[in-house]
Amino acid sequence: MVTMIALMGEQTLPNFLPLLHYKPACVLCLYTSTTRQAFDRFQKTVQKHGDLDCSVSGLCVEPYDLDKTANALKKHLEQKQLSGQNCLFNLTGGTKVMSFAAYHVAQEWQAPMFYFQSELKQGNLIEYEWQNGRPQQVRQNDLSCEQLTLEDILDLHLGSNKWYEDTKGKGDEGSRFEQTLADLLRAEGYEVRQQVHIGDSQAEIDIMLRFRQRYGVIEVKHKKKAPTGEQAGIDTKAIKQLATSTRQLGTYVQRFYILNVPLPAIHKALIELTGINTIVLKSYRDGKLSAEDRQKFVSEIAQVLR
Image (tube, rainbow, N blue to C red; front, side, top):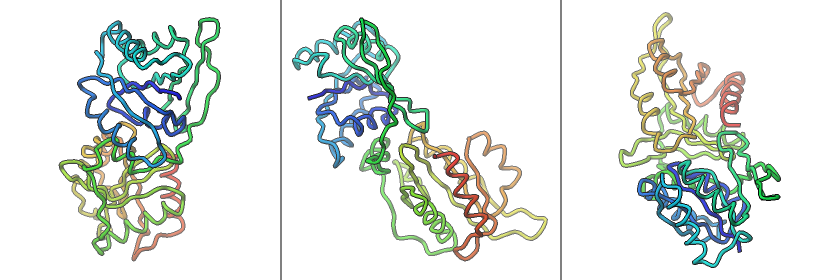
């Protein structure tokens, strides 16, 4: 039986995704007083997941005291009668001091380690083993994310009781625009959820989508086209909500703002400041898009998430 040692930070995906890949029997999470809630959400998500048969335990450590953290980890593992042969260290996450402490114990025990390159679209796992007392990279794997779901992502970041999906629909033209885009995304192989209400504020996400471990949220805005030479009346409320409320979904979330009318010039600076991806689909009418706009939408989404 393999026990994975994971370092808990505010971003829990770098700890969750390797579980789906390695499927260890146990995982020991090192967390701190500031990441206790993240650990609790992580534990509940793992226990809820149908493809994982993994026990989760936690150890509260000092985030910036290397000796105390290393000694506490070593003592805990020894009490469990574990050795380097049945431990696997995930050096991703936590503070740098926590990572150094885990490395120190892995070195002493000559235990295998890995690092998850979460900033890459591929999500590479870089694995290390000890040879002549030195860590050597032995392989680099493309992480399999087939078992990850949007439900996992929402549960990890918010908690299972802090979001829900409203499937009723409003029946107006804006809803039909949204449905048209959601259907296009599903046809392209994305997992899609619609009308997701998140957090205590119950902010609403029109569309949430995922491809492998990459995920994003879409705000859809449908407006009547303005007369020639004029701009459609669009306020900044939707842009601000998209930029702020979705912070709860972690640093890896990508944001998209989809309109059927040109973006007012006065809003462009705000869009650039917030890093939101904007796509204008002028051809939309009565639930239909031109072939050119369908390709434009699919292509620009793929550039970010694939």
